[in-house]
Image (cartoon, rainbow, N blue to C red; front, side, top):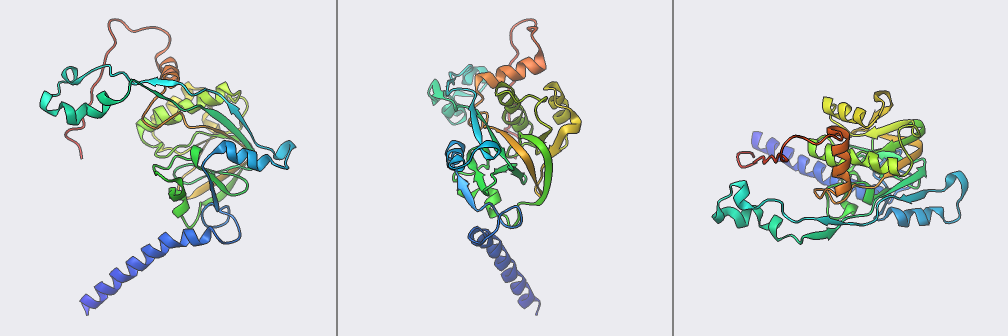
Length: 290
C-alpha cells in the first residue's frame, strides 16, 4: 500500500509540474491581460519596434517615446594581465583563461536609450517590463534565457498582485539584482542612463528596484542621490503599474562593462582624487567554491 501511495504521489507531482509548464502557454491565448491573470500575452524583442507599432494612430499623452543616450561603441577587451601574472600554471592556462585571451581586442557595445510610456508595468522577481497592451519588452527585461519567448515571467500563472503608483515611476530592476555584481554593474549605471536622458531624481516620483534589502543597496542608491522614501521594491508576488513609466535600456551585454559605466561608478564611489601609488588589482579565486 505504501508503494502504491508513493507512486500516486510521484505521478501527481509530475502532473502538477506539467500543468504548471503548459498552463501559461494556454493562458496567453485567452482574453484578458496579465494585469489580472496569466503571463504577458505578447513578446516584443525590440523596444523601438514596439514604440513604432504603439504610436501608429496614437498621439498626445498616450504616445510612447524613445530617447537615444549612448551610441554603440567598441569595448576594449585587450587582456590587462595574463596567466603568469595571475599565478596560473602554464598547463592550466588554456582552460583557465583561453576564452579571455582569445577574445578579439574590441567588440561593439550596445547603444543605450530611455523609453517613456503610459501605464507601463514592472512585474515579478526579474522586474519584467510590460507595456499597456500587455507586451513583454524583452530587450529591457533581462531573463537569463537565450530565447525571450521562454522568459521566466512567461511561465508564470500570475504576474503578481497589481499595485498602482500615481505619477511617474522609473525602473532599474534587473534579473538577479540581489547579487552584488549585478547590482553594481547592471543596475546602478542605469541611473546614469536616466540622468543623461533628462530623468534625474527630480523628475520621477518613484524608483522601482528588485533588491535583497542589503544595506549596501540603499547606501549606493544614496550616492546617486536617490531618496529612500521614493524607492519601491517589486518582487515575485507583485507587479507595479505607473501612470507613466520610464525605462532605461540595459547597460550592455551582461558581464561586459562599458567604459562609461565603470567611469560613473568610480566617480560616485571613489571621488576625483587619485589613490597613492600604482593601481591595486585584486584577484579573487573561485577554485574552492561549489
